[in-house]
Amino acid sequence: MQTNPLAFTSPAASAKNPASGVFHVPFVRPMMPPYELLHEEFEKIVCSGQLTKGPNVQKFEQAIAQRLGVRHAVAVSSCTVGLMLVYKSLGIAAGSCRDNRGRADCRVAGMEQRSRLNGALSVDLTQPMGEVIMPSYTFLAGPAAVVWNNLRPVFIEVDPATTNVLPQTVAAAITPHTVAISACHNFGNPCDVPALEAIAAEHGLPLIIDAAHGFGASSHGKPVGSGGTAQIFSLSPTKLLVAGEGGIVATNCDCLAHFVRMGREYGNDGSYDALFSGVNGRMPELSAALGLASLTILDSVVVRRDQIATLYRQELSQVPGIGFVETSPGSQSSHKDFSITIDPAQFGISRDSLRREMADRGIETRAYYDPPCHLQKAFAHFYDPMRPLPVTELLSARSLSLPMGAHVDEAVVDDICKTIAHVQQTL
Ligand SMILES: Cc1ncc(COP(=O)(O)O)c(C=O)c1O
Image 1: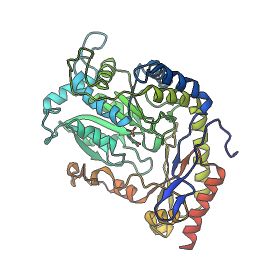
Image 2: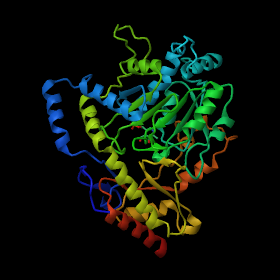
Image 3: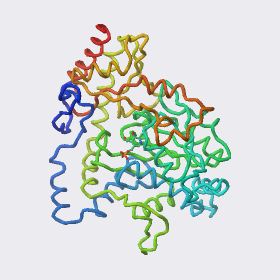
Image 4: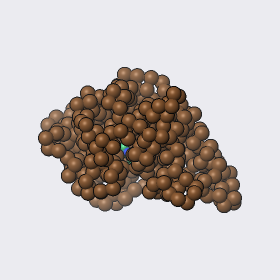
């Protein structure tokens, strides 16, 4: 592999290491499009003064919808806001969606019937009622969006091999209080959307996929994004497709898209008589222009990430006590993160000790997701000890995400892997 064979810009790499100064290998550097692709549009936006609600957002939404093969791609200010608005819209939009025979039987309507039944989406914020089944081994934005909507996360276990929820675990957690199912393409590794869709359809529940890591991932040759009720993507700098900050709500449901669009405008349909309490969730024009340029290099970014992941795996597979995330047959991970597990008994030291040793040698890593959501202050009271999560807790204690991004080339991978092997052999 060449050092930097692809057309993207690598901003200068430096990050502060609290222990010993500067990380010579920061955890992440965004893979940016070359500035030549940006400056003309940036100049137009700045000179026109149209900083929001302009043509770039529209163009970006169309381009993403086409790439993902969905009817709607709604651009929002972040994935978190997208998730919040989707749950909100599921309550608001309920019943307004009709199939081609005029029946209100889409999955959005399914949620409303359940919500009414359980009294969910009431305004009593102290007593969330409707339950959303979701992994605890995920980023905290997932349960945050649920709790913001006065719903209750029900944390379930993940598969230790793929780190994604298993359809049978989801099915076993469904109760009369369940109002939605949420899964994640964790670390960019596609979850089993068709199997989850079948369960959701059987129970009349919406399926919300946290696709924050999803750009660049595919299943059986198709980009992830089109299955389920909605898939919500992130465009923050750690992702393969970047817009500064931003998110995309991808859905085939017309009424859900309609209410997410209204929700990103404070819940105002233009009449200045708000239908519901929304947010300012708009994507700025400059972000959309960056997203459009980033889209032109996405395929090469995917190739590059895959090369790096393969190299990491080759070099680390000889080191005892290291485990890798498995991808299901037919799936291609985006490798938003390259995460390994450290078995302390075989490796010799714990994940945390290895992290410290690497930091001392100038290599920045992350411990995703430690603590897991069910042990965080904001969500611990939703955790039911009768439903223990030993796999999640083990993954949280052992998982180590290695540097990924524009600054990571063959030599950097070699340096990181040699450091890990050296630490393993000498401590
Ligand atoms: C799994 C997951 N969901 C949601 C988010 C939130 O994304 P954003 O920062 O765009 O709100 C992230 C952020 O990285 C994430 O990793």
